[in-house]
Image 1 (tube, rainbow, N blue to C red):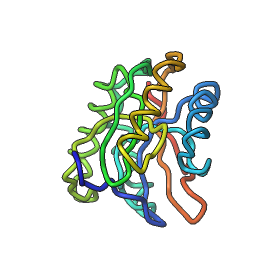
Image 2: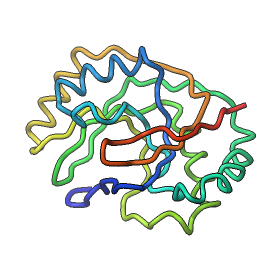
Image 3: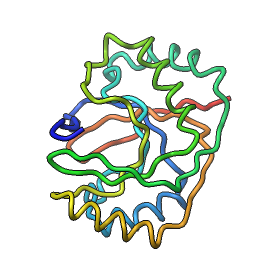
Image 4: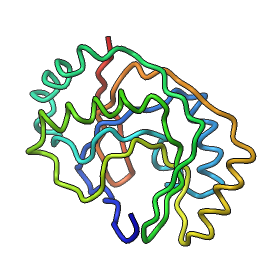
Length: 179
């Protein structure tokens, strides 16, 4: 995946994400603080799909999302393995176990809302970002540090969140409860 750029959000763009509960976010934020990820403007999350439908279409789209998720029940995600992307700015991340449910949700959203989703040369990889690094050497050093000290985390995914990006970062606009 070298030299492919991850897309940064623009003001007004939306995404569908999963946000861990506060206790898990606090643990993740400890690492993100060490690695200066997002400068605390973005809460730890797993992106399901980005960009997503514009806010002007959300009320209409919400019904379709709810219907698509009706057979997906709350599920547990475990975070214990690390992964990385190597780009112009490399990324260290946690791999969610039970990513199959995240993949199912992603696939359903692509199927239903494909016309609102720009094609990407990058494959969807469920992940939770810990840090960004200017070099592969910095990334590998950070990975070694995390591997030595990281304690596995887990949480229940019981909702999917619709968020909008503005001048101050991501903001939750709505959520859909999994049944």
